Amino acid sequence: HNIKRSDNLDAASRVMLPPNSRRGRDLRLAIESYRTFIMGMVTDSLQRKVIMDNFSTQPSKRSKKKASNWEIALFEGMPLGAVVTMFTKLQNDIRYAEGEVLHTLINNVDVGDFRVNQIKAYVIPNSENVVMGNSYKANIVLSAEDSTQRPNIFVNGRLLDPSRNGFFEAFASKPGTFPVEGYIEMRRGDGSLQRHPFSQKYTVVEPMATVSNTLMNVLYAGIDNKVSISVPGVTDRQITATSNNGSLTKAGKFWVAKPSRPGQECLITVTATMDGRSQVVATMPFRVRPLPEPRPFIEYKDENGLTRRYKGGVGFRKSILLEAPGIIAALDDDLLEVNFRVISFKTLIYDSMGNTLPENSQGSRFSDQQKKQIRSLTRGKRLWISNVKAIGPDGIEQTLSPMEVIIN
Image (cartoon, rainbow, N blue to C red; front, side):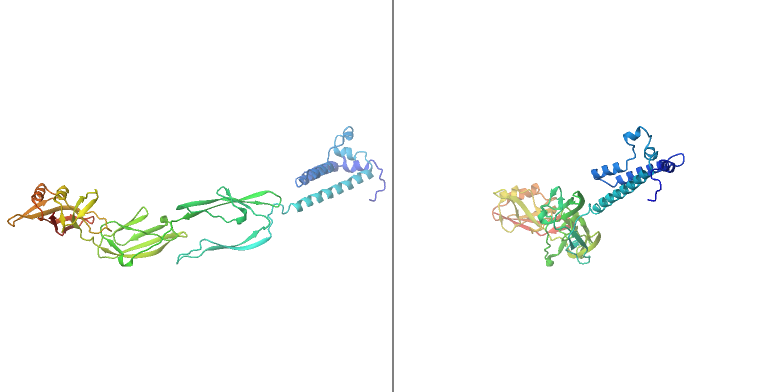
């Protein structure tokens, strides 16, 4: 410094203090502002104490007795050489503070980042099975990983085994929709933990297979035909079906088709909702036939209490016949359970002279006169049941084939 009189005691006060100047006060305020700014970027307690001491604007205890504030204590009556030395120290303190802040900032640039040492490519498909007419969709991504540490993965409240590298497996014990929720916990470079939550769901469907006999694709008109409709990989709620002949409605796990026009083909069209859009997945044709003609039976209990049906043509005990309330009409087929209602029938016997003795019943029960006829029959005699009229669920009245009862 080119200072001619370093022992001058008035120069510093004339330049820095009132009434000639307020530079001393401005310097104090600038130091306090700079100190606050620097302290906001320093976290180490030792460094903070050094900076606070270097940039303190409080007069010392000895100076407080003579001066009212920092600038008067520092510049009033102070030799010019000492003031210049103080300014040099202040410059050095500023450089020190800046160096400490830069060191702290550089060390903390990536302190919260995750360390990775390998990059992998993954294909994450929406589904590995695609129905024809739909699109294969997948996310192709790059994954940055750290082979030196594994994240903690919590799924549905449980920690996955780290050795499985994030592989999750859940046993599907029942159908329905189930959640996959949790979070991935990863340690940062500074040792802190960060959580990344996730939420997903999956649907379990029952195992299914469709087996059909194409020669027997038959529906019967006027009755409820139970139909099984399923689409692999699609839940029941995502399936709809329609029919062009009669009605088709959902009933539990099955569908009920009720064709109205026999002889006309019935087309059942199946639509499934996949990937957010509806798509026709199948159209199945069925032949529609009228119900087979039922035949009359006499229903009775055998010696074991089991219900049996007598259809005539062989010997039948008169005592069992008298216990029977009447006749029924049913299909001679165990595969179809169809209820018919008998509305009338006629019985006929021959007397000893060969004369016919007919009796009528308005309903399905034997009338008193018909019961009297039966009591009069002896072993080997025959009772003819004819003109049996019955109505099925299709509402069509039919006249059934006659029935021959042989008294045993």
